[in-house]
Image (tube, rainbow, N blue to C red; front, side, top):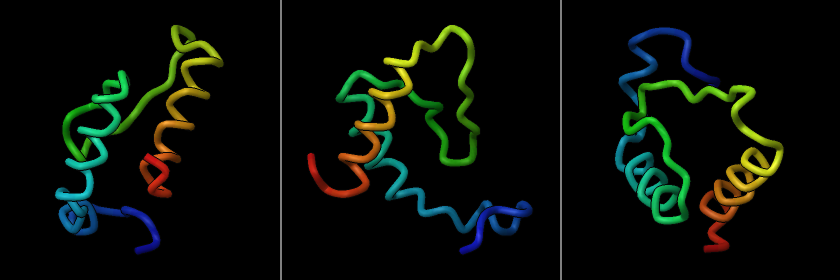
Length: 66
């Protein structure tokens, strides 16, 4: 898929994979919006360390380096 452009694309989201990723991130101390159809936001409240840790943890999940 080339990205979500409309609601029809959004409903094709792999919710099972999202659930696994959500659980992995939560187990590692990173709380995300609990729905595959919600956006993630970064704000000034997030430090560079927060962003780096989130990125590294997601990378471990995505590349199976858990």
